[in-house]
Each structure stands twice: as structure tokens, then as C-alpha cells.
Image 1 (spheres, rainbow, N blue to C red):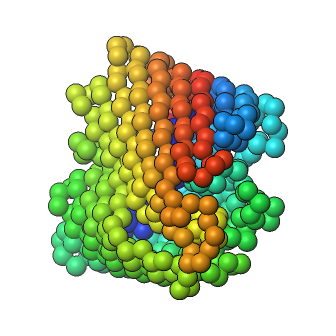
Image 2 (tube, rainbow, N blue to C red):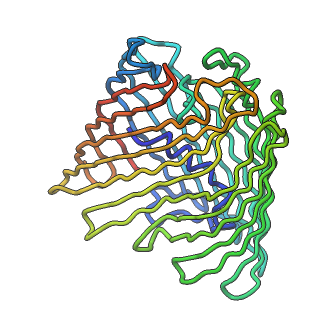
Length: 401
């Protein structure tokens, strides 16, 4: 099992990415049909036991079940003149043996069109998600929701290695009408539209390294809970490293001025962080680090948002021949903010999350890996009933990833 919730949280740092990166297919793409490149993958994950299906507290006798997830995915690139049209389809087919109401099909679709001209590049893009995955560390129910993001970027080359970009995005989050958690209707509390306008500067230090500086304005508007409406100003600087570089990925550090429109909600002004970096030592040891720090919305109207800080480390080691070992560890903090005058169980409470895991794998050829994994997840909270711990263990088979 991967640190899916941490990855999901890092996706919220979308606005910090470099403005435009040419979406060309990788060198090891598996299929080519004329101007089209296709890279299919498939994985069998979490084929084993989940000892706490509903993230229940220990005193509530957590339920366990056999579960598995099959994940087919396909990336496609189509060259049209100088431009590239790229897209991806990702499906999670989740099965529970006993608790049939936890079964689901989770879909993610993305499309992007890179249109490079002499000194100007255009990049319209869209993404659609329909899922029952938990939305983060806080909400334990697998509630159906959809997210649609549309936007576009215009990037202008001002000097040989310097680019100025303007971007606008609009995201809508829509929970199912029946989605509930602890007696709260998630549609009524969390349905919202987020619009973002960004201006940024990107400079190519080397062919493999770019640095960015961006300023963004964000407006969050809730469909049925206007008390949560807010405006934010964000400033961030970051570095983006090419997949061919020694260290891969990117990192950003920034400042966010988060201002709720309702005077009963406290503001937040502070540092934000995002990192997704990996490094391979001597060709046999891989280190991967993910980190995040930003504001997230809570389902609880009395503590309507929290500051989430998290970090995760994964180390993969080739033992000998086709055998490898993997270790994972992660930790996080959820720092809640109270609405003025509201009655809360614990004022300005802080929850903690912990993840530990690891496993062994066997590689079959270049594209297949068979692994045995075990992962433990915990949430510690001063609020009674919000603590839980659970274990997942089983086999995983990946092909093409």
C-alpha cells in the first residue's frame, strides 16, 4: 500500500508547478501507432487484509475484511505538427469481500494540449475525478465525490532562458447528496468552486533544472455553506528537476495569506511547503521524500479548517539479483482553528497521523514486480472516538509502472 492520502494532499499544491512543460512521451514508451504513443500499465494492489475498514476507534471493535484493488491506467501522446496532445486514464477497481458497500470504481481523466509558437506557448488543460477514495486524513467515510478542473496557461519567452506565464484555473468539488460523516452532510458543508489566477516567472538554470517564482490569487466559494468562503494570496518559489537529473522531482516554499470572509473565522498567514523528490544512490538505493504544509477544509462547521503538515520517506534497496526491499514512514499534524463563539470538544485541537510500512519484492523481467507489503496507519486525537489504528497486509503485482 502506498501513502495515497499523502499523495492526494500533495496534489493540492498544483498551483505551484512550473507554468508549461512539454508533454512529450518518455523514451521507454511501449506502443507507437503512427503519430500516437501509448503507455499502458496495470497493477494489483492491496490484495490482502484490512484490519480497520472504517477507521474505527479501538473501543468500537474495528471491522476487518479481505480487499483488493486493480488499477489499469493508460497514458497517450499525440503529435500534431509542433504541438502535443496528451491524456491519461486511471481507474481504481476496489473490492471488499464482506462489506459490499465499500466497493467502488474510481476514475481519473486528464487531457492537456501543448501548443508552442515562436515565443509564446499555450496550454489548455482539464482533469476530471469521480471517486470514493477518502478525501484526506480527516474524513473516514468513503464518500462519492467528483472534481472537475479546467484551465489554461500562456507562457512568453522574454529571454533565451526566461519565461513569463499567466494561468487561470477553475475547480469544482461536488459530493454526492447522500454523502455523510458523523451526522454531517458533506455536500452541504464541502461543495465548492475554487478559482485561481497566477502570474509566474520561470528561469532555466540548466537543461535539467528550472527555478520558478509565482504569485497567485485564490477565491473559494461554497455552494451551501457561505460561512466558509475565503480569499487567499499566495507567493511561492520553487525548483523543478528533470527526470534525467540526478535528483528528480520538485520542491516549493511559499507564503499564504488566507482570509475567510466571515469575521467569526480566524485568518491564517504563514509558510506553505511542497516537495516531491527522489534520488538513486549507486543505482541500487532509491530515496523518495514527500512533504506538504497548507490549509485544508474540515467537515466540521465549528472548526471549519485546519493547517495540515506532513512528511513521508520511502527507501527502496536492491538486495541481490531481482529481489528488493522497501521501507516507508510518514507523519502529519492537523492543527484545527475554532469558529468564534462555537462550542467545540477541544479548542484549537491538534491531531497527529502516523504511517509505517515496508515489504519485499521480486522483479520478473523489466516490467513486472511481485511484492509482499504491510502498512500500519494511525491517527492520534484528543477527541474521544477520533483515534484509530489499522493494518493492511497482502500482495501487490505491478506491470509496466
